[in-house]
Length: 78
Image (cartoon, rainbow, N blue to C red):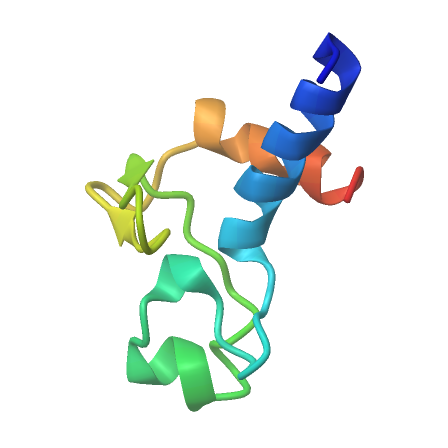
């Protein structure tokens, strides 16, 4: 892979944490019922401090506005 391909892959992986999967749930929500089922909550995304490497579940503080907020740029490129 060249650098552009690596960047695209990383963008996709990071965006994938926040995008709904086949069942409609987002990995960052990790099956938390209000975020999975409640129409008033399911489109809210928390920008956690960090994420579980295997599942994408948000870990740590859920009100980060630093590097995690950069995912918005990734969502636009997927």
